[in-house]
Image (cartoon, rainbow over all chains, first blue to last red):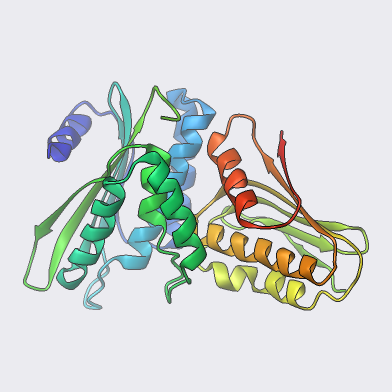
Amino acid sequence: MNAFYELYNVMNGKHIIMIYEGEFNQEITKTVLSMTENSFGDFGIESGIRKKIFNVMVEVLQNICKHQYNNHSAEPSALFLVGDNETDFIIVSGNIIENSKIEIVKSKIDKVNSMSKIELKEFYKVSRLESTLSDVGGAGLGFIDIARKTGEKIEYEFSPVTSEYSFFSQLARISKNDLND
Amino acid sequence: MEKINIEGTDDTPKVVIDSEAGVFMISGRSLPEDVITFYQPIMNWLDSYSLKTPLKLDVKLEYFNTASSKIILDILLKLEELSEKSITTSINWHYDANDEDMQEAGEEFSEMVNVPFELIKY
């Protein structure tokens, strides 16, 4: 995958709307959201796409808050970036994940990536009806929602760090043109 | 019935429930980290609804996260339960004309609950 070469280009071209690295919690999520919303005006982004970006950001940020690895010896630190190139807005996140959870995350993303728009709609509907909210308050619908809102594959990578955990990077892409396809 | 009036914040919606005035409205943004705690008073209120007066829910949300989407479905299903107890219930789903995702979300909710459901563009 070339997502991280693309990230390099985004950073190099300084097409960054917002970047944050550090601790993640709901308060920081709110701050990151409002800072990004404030920059949307400067970038002249139309409201339909703005809402899409915002929605995807919420799911990505709350996934980090709810699922980031915390070994209790240090503050969990993660990375979040919103940028753009000529054709797309991109939302990139990176956080530490336990190796034992990699397969679960990978299979969830691979599943939504394999589905058509209509299959995703049906899968979301069934999953929402059958889901129960987890201990951390998630409905298990985040990746399905991201795939539906963006209409694109979710790109990801797991980079091993230790025998216990890895770095999970994820990139979601929102086209600047065909808003609803 | 008890009245509920919760002011909206950056991540929680404004909720107004006043059955005497015929008002039941959820508006603004719903992206709390803990949706269960936030929505508990509303669920409790619906569970204890004992009037025969019709109950019309207006949902006018700008954003909601997936966890809220699950809870909103639960609320709509509670309205369906009430309608099975011969209480007239209905739902008005308001969406921004530029927001096709919110329109589609409304259409999908309408397919899942057996309660009169109106989609209203603003």
